[in-house]
Length: 289
Image (cartoon, rainbow, N blue to C red; front, side):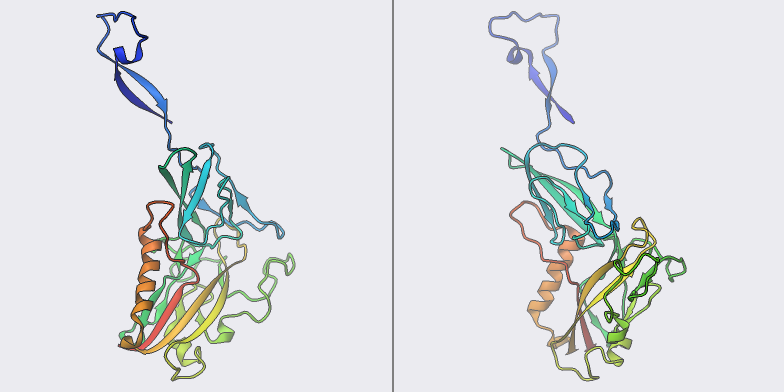
């Protein structure tokens, strides 16, 4: 990529060389652009099952020598080559990848998305009928669900267990006993929607009257009928309980807002900026306003 730079003719001719008056007083010269963002060929990076080997993607262009950075946390990227380890990166998130060319301070950004689902951090007040936790796809809250709005399309499975779905053995299956529903986390296996109210009533926090600040962590395994061809993926989720909204610490509220800003607004301007880690998503369940 090049950009044009207008200069006076006498500025580019050797000293002492006469200027032809028939020529215009300016000419157009071209210089290579200093800031070239990395190009990964596609903005959506799809997880691939490679018999236990990590799936990695490198830039298809050559922006030169420099340093690669990314935000928010969760993207496993080689700072020298820009190679992204899709297998080890958190899925279902939108990232900014920045490149800083050696000898320059400008940062060139490109956007990449790791295909998959995410649940947004938030405070859910059950008494306000805020009882359902919906997955978002490919980092976009407005994205049409891949499995259909009601899970009507075949090929997706949420809260997958150790059954051999595709007949290729147990290597790409979850470990036994890791079902969310077995831990009283009520996940719709067709849509991935989690009923927070039903989960609490069924004993997510161990009792109907848990203490404030009670935490539960879980791992949801899932498969999508998308570019991953049903490869097994997972997302860790953290749940915390409070009886009333006024019981939620202000620091926790601020942390959740920081994470949402990082995910939805890309609050990131330079390599020195820090963005809160979006994983695991923190779901704060409040019984009453």
